Length: 416
Image 1 (cartoon, rainbow, N blue to C red):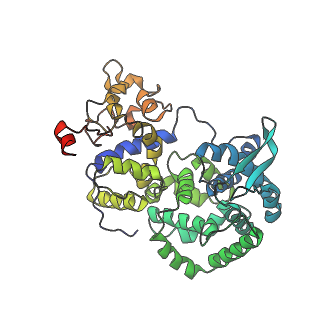
Image 2 (image 1 turned 60 degrees about the horizontal axis):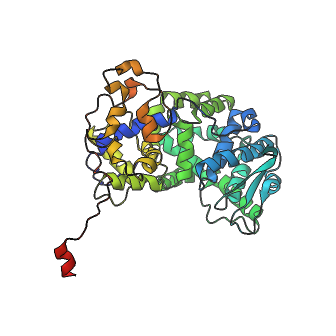
Image 3 (image 1 turned 120 degrees about the vertical axis):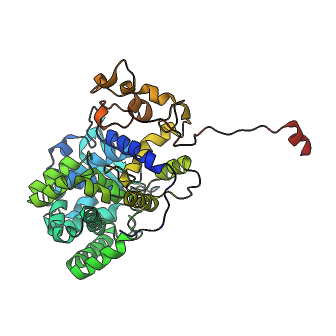
């Protein structure tokens, strides 16, 4: 992976293990709720569940709860019919509803209802062309994302595990996002999707150009939030769809890929990029004075520098910074520096850890962690062996978020 000279901010090596822990905590809640609900999704084969998840992320420019609770059931119906062989263009035409005031189509369920009403989802930006093009291309691969991956596994398997992760990402980027342009839901979207699908199919057949395009793509692969967010859910340890991904590989007759994913879990995770988001940037700019840009590329560069110096534990990688969208809205926007994990001993956060309390210690293991509940608003079973908090030395990693409001002196008022 290409690197630039990008000196990491002070204290980032101290911050990273805490973010790695919070990222792992976020993926392993005490009570696991289905990300996509409904009887249709639950009845789908693993590969079809994975395709539903992928289609949802194509529309991932809306509030997350809406994405999964609305788009999930609607697209699960779409995938069920698609998997049964229903023609792609006609299938999209059936569920798409054009709203006069909206830039993008709405998509409506046909057999699942909530409060006696069809479930309806409206993408903020047009998504019909990338969805249709994806499904058209997959018709050549048994309508299965993982058969598609299996077909190009020899291409993906070159290099070490982080590069394999990049090659997998490139392959799925080619399927859905490559040269997408400003594809509109207006006009002849069917023709546009078919033309793009033919273009993608031709590009995939040219192995020489595929390798050349990968080299170009790898230099500019940091900004596709939807791509990296979906792959993180499939492949990162504790990912929401990792078990589905592995089960789907088995069904797709790709046990060698499944074995590689299981035995190279950490290496693949190190190849995941941060699903770029405004929360990452806002969080890091608050913590590190002088940081003006803190996007996925910068985080990758900091990581490579610290890794080369040997300053990070082996279970740290760039995509863990995405947990800031769970932490930052409550703690940073709420200006809770008095109970922040990244502040020194005067922070009340340290008192919320039962393992640090002599009355409980390691006997608290398995019970809900009060600190996680305070920081992120969800329940996690205390696991002292994997937690950095009990043995940490509190320090001011963050300068704090207290507002600095000063009153002018009498002398200053007189001067004006």
